[in-house]
Image (cartoon, rainbow, N blue to C red; front, side):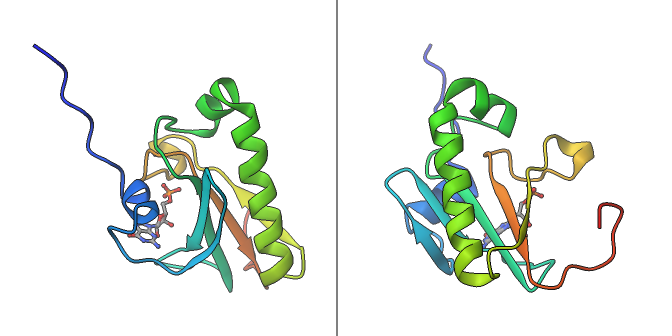
Length: 118
Ligand code: 5GP
C-alpha cells in the first residue's frame, strides 16, 4: 500500500494560483502576499512555494539557503512597503499561535501596537 500524498497547504495553493491572494513579491522558490487578516499596517506572509518544511527549525536544518532567500525577500518587501523597518515573526507550534504548518514568516511593519515585545 502506498502512502497518500499530503493535501497541499493553503500557501502552496496560493503559490500555484489556485487561491487568490495579493502577491507582493516572488522569486523562483519564495512567494510573498498580504495576510488576509492583517495585524499591522503592513502584514505580509513570506513563504517557500512548496511545503516540505513545517516550521523555521525544519527549514534551517533542511535548506539554510532557502531560509536566507526567504529573509532576503522579507527585507525587500519591508524596504518597499515599510521604510525598511519591520518585525519578522515565525510562529512555531500550536501553542505559539501557528495555524498553517507550512513554514512562513510574518513581515510586520508600519506603526506596530504596544505588545510584550514592543
Ligand atoms: P500562523 O498563525 O500560522 O503563524 O499564520 C498564518 C497566517 O496566514 C494568519 O495570519 C492568517 O491570517 C493567514 N492566512 C490564512 N489563510 C490565508 C489565506 O487564504 N490567504 C491569506 N492571504 N492569508 C491567510
